[in-house]
Length: 139
Image (cartoon, rainbow, N blue to C red):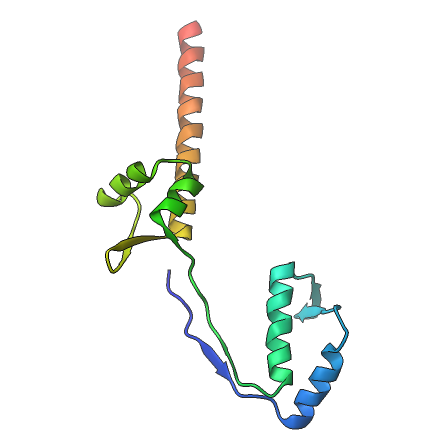
């Protein structure tokens, strides 16, 4: 998954910054319109937008970038409900992609979630096959 290059925005002009600061003062109501449609942001997104606007209101230059969440093997194993050793063996076999930070393995959250999804699909297919086998054996 490629990350989008950071975007740097210069600080606002003094008048614009003052007007934005005044609008943000003592207000928790942040309404977002996209193509004329109102969107309610989850708390984390709302907080990030408010922080961005507050920085611009102070006349600060702002850089916005993406961060891909990387997990330690212990975190990834706990999330997946498998042992740390089993996960390391899977990375050794190439079943789950791994990146190295020095000698430490790091695994993308998206890769673990993808693996978990594939396991769910495999389990559902196995259950369907077992049901078919049982139905065919009963006839």
